[in-house]
Length: 217
Image 1 (cartoon, helix red, strand yellow):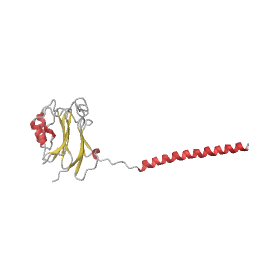
Image 2 (cartoon, helix red, strand yellow):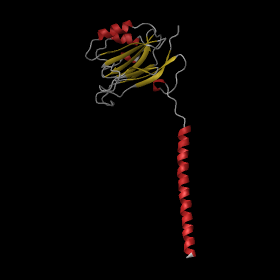
Image 3 (cartoon, one colour):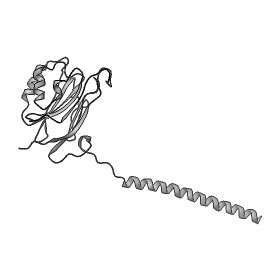
Image 4 (tube, helix red, strand yellow):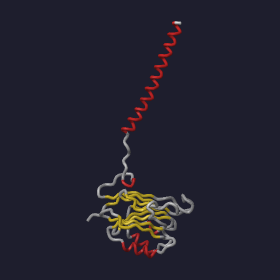
């Protein structure tokens, strides 16, 4: 009887110690996870979600062309969405946002249908842009069919290189300025090519981000 009692005592102690060990391990794991979450450093978020911070006296921007004829383009400047499908201010053709080059304030947003519309209002709009204005453009569906040489020249004067070859359903985003003396470094362009298109009849979305120098007096 004494032997049996002693064996039961040993088993009970072993079970207790094993239970204590398991509980302590689980608790330690949870504590490590909690402390890890507590002290984990979140990656910094920059304006418009761009990959790095802009230097002083620069405006952060990020933009994307439309996706086929389904999702409209998006233009963000200094963490403010200037144009998007959610804002319901984008449309087929070329979408344009004008921004004051000194203050970063929005001057105007418009879109011009270059498939079924008339290029004349677009030309008048381009001619009306004042010196020192930042110009951001993005295509949606088709931004080229109604473009003529005059419209292309006016956009080229804003710093675009690709506008001369922009064709039917090409995807294009561009950021330039009125009075710019050189070609803009901010331009992305993908040709509509049935062999490489991501969507049926349209190429993939083009995106672009960067830091626009603030206009100085």
